[in-house]
Amino acid sequence: MDRKIKKVLVANRGEIAVRIIRGCADAGIKSVGIYSECDRTAYHARLADEVYYVGPSPSIESYLVQDKIIEIAKKSKADAIHPGYGFLAENAEFAKLCETSGIIFIGPKSETIALLGDKLEARKMAIKANLPLVPGAEFDNSNISEVESIAEKIGYPVLIKAAAGGGGKGMRVVEDKEKLSESIKSAIREATSAFGDGRVYLEKYVIKPRHVEIQILADMYGSAIYLGERECSIQRRHQKVIEESPCPIMTPELLKKMGEAAVNIVKESKYVGAGTVEFLVDKDLNFYFLEVNTRLQVEHPVTEMVTGIDIVREQFRIAEGKKLSFKQDDVRQNGHAIECRIYAENPEQGFMPSTGTIEQYREPSGPGVRVDAGVVAGSQIPIYYDPMIAKMVVWGANRTEAIERTLRALNEYRISGLSTTIGFASAVMSNKNFRKGDYATDFVEKEFPEKRFSCHIDDIKQKAAISAAVFEYLGRQKVTVNSPGKKAGNGSTKNGWSQYYRSRSINRMGGSR
Ligand code: MV4
Image (cartoon, rainbow, N blue to C red; front, side):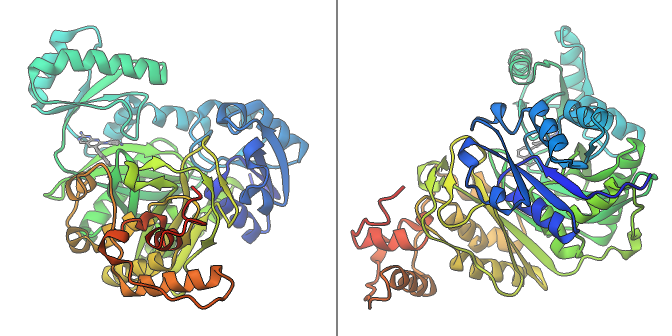
């Protein structure tokens, strides 16, 4: 079964393509990049050993064109395709196409992707594997009185979910019987138009849950292990903002139970590769299965930093038909890691995507800091794709150290030319309840209820850093930095330079959005 992978086509862009290309280099594997029209000069395309044009900028004409990607894989003689996340990563049809084309798809088998992608099938699988589930049920879409009696039995509030959904898409909370049939009808309509599949089901709505997920690895020979958990409750509108590991409320007993549950569903579904099992955890530390993500996740580096295991490397090994090289007892969680997702968005304008060119770009570094970015100075941020441009992942010996170090690193980060969420991440790190570890999925709406977020720069260190940056930019002329004052310091999301410039009414840089 052993098949050495010599060359991998990376069917993605941005930071995850960069991550996988680096993983290839570390494993002695050649990488093939693909790029769309607007990604001609993108960093991932510069970094790959070999690159091919895949099509016009819109994803449906480039990163989603299955036949074209297979054709490039064949032309470049790639043994395998790594899909990253998003795009074709959880597309069972594409995995199948790889299989029938004799190309290794780095991920589970297409049947597994199809099965777990159907949330009702995944639920059945979880029941078979004895996982705890939120009380809920599938029902006949056409029979409203049946639905009403099921909802009554579950107890209000109930949550309508789409079988083809996931990640929060197509969900509806229903508070009482009166709104049930109308909500179901609109949920079916929405699911039909979004997924071409109108099947929905009901679950008891868990109030203020935490979102905790377990990273797993499984080989082709039925062995599976868990690599600890990630706490992912800090999100806004189902978009994760901060992730950390360990979960602040985790206990060794709970981790063992959740980890073993995750391994059970993985084994039951004959899963192969790296994957994530999502759970809700309530305030009494009860946990409930949600879904299985059959891909490498955005937040995987949090686990890598705490366990020391290179998940992408393990994906290659598993895909080559190797057995897992370590046992559950070999996995240790060391210290604490926090990931801040850096989005090209403007928090002051309701987190609207902020497109344009990155003018200055300087990453933080130093002890415990890892930045996975898809950009460099001069990069264009196109409108066509996800606005996440980088992830800053910070390790500390304990949670407090990780938080303090995250703040230090965020203060060091300089991006100008467009708006980012760096200032927002700092505000989360400074939040009292975040620091206590006392938060759930309602954190952002509760602690930052305004649609627009603006953060005030009054930190002396930040000022010093800004002056250094100005100094650098003005070609080493001597610059006197005045105190920005209360009113002026509102542009923190522009991070550093532009803030300063705005407060001094110099718009050479700040004006370039
Ligand atoms: C839930 C829930 C409460 N009760 N299910 C959202 C993403 C999808 N994977 C499942 N989600 C939820 N399912 C029950 N029965 C609350 C959420 C939820 C949520 C979950 C994880 C992270 C953020 C969230 C934000 C709002 C709601």
